Length: 383
Ligand SMILES: Cc1cc2nc3c(=O)[nH]c(=O)nc-3n(C[C@H](O)[C@H](O)[C@H](O)COP(=O)(O)OP(=O)(O)OC[C@H]3O[C@@H](n4cnc5c(N)ncnc54)[C@H](O)[C@@H]3O)c2cc1C
Image 1: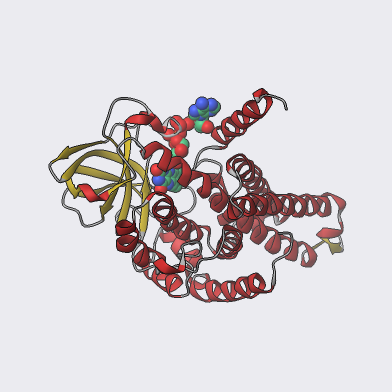
Image 2: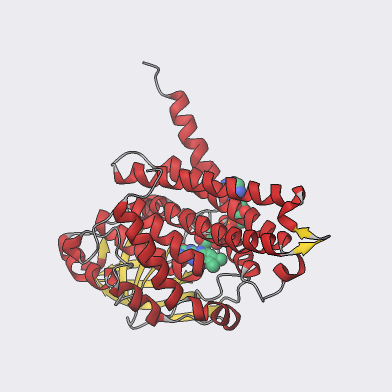
């Protein structure tokens, strides 16, 4: 767990070279222009990077979350936007692996795992973010079909996805009234609403998705009616590991750039790393990254070994994303005015880091998850 094995080392090296060549040359331009290139997902898919944890029989690599975490870290060092793309197109796969029936797995998984299809996960709405169980989009059964209406907010891959995993209400209020549906991107009545103008993660498209009498086969229900909230939460438990991995990659890239700069930049006749104020800042950054990585890897290891990982994944998300925000901010500080300007990527890393504390459950919500685990542990009968 603490050091990559030989297979993981080879995987990390191969991914590092591949994404630097593929995404590196356009990363700054696409951030400035808010441009998403779907073809990059196809190309990463051809290398197996879009279906790392999906079983081989459904077209994935059949590896574990520890391997997945290491791959996402490498992609994020170049572009957090595309690392998020890989993680988000992974969410419908996690759901199908855990909740899908055999027909659904055969129909939907291979194209997602191959990066031929882009996936999206639609839980949030304008009025329900953290309080996801109060969502209002509806799905009404009519014969062999469901008819979906409503609007989903902040959909990563909105307008680009081939498969939308949508949570909608089939029953009464609260979590038990929610169900999960597979909706093709070209379904009649599904359209893209407003596109968000964002502070960071600007190469990742985020839009509203409008559902206007969208008819889908009843066979596209995932799990049973009323399972939707549980389905979404199991996806988010795993998603926390992926976002935390992306945070580690973003922070590491910021340290690599600012650490190298601090060794070269001279003021008062010596490299600025030799001033204790700068050297200690870099030392704290490195320590925070290493701590985060350990916790992310532990959460992934627990998941891979069939253990309860939910609380540890929430801790990993809090620690790694808070660290990424601080590390990237400090990287700008280490580089002074040059760090604040677009000649270097650290200002992009800092803007990208902020959303990691917010999406896949804000870091306040993660603390709710952690405190619930604590309450359960401390109120369990002592034996
Ligand atoms: C770039 C981007 C991409 C996204 N991608 C997706 C996606 O693909 N799919 C999707 O479904 N959603 C997506 N989201 C939505 C994201 O998950 C939500 O923004 C997030 O869950 C927070 O919800 P909210 O924005 O409504 O904030 P709110 O829930 O309104 O929270 C506002 C503040 O109140 C705090 N708060 C709320 N409740 C509590 C509480 N009980 N205790 C303590 N503090 C609390 C929050 O922590 C936060 O600080 C995305 C958002 C962004 C910006």
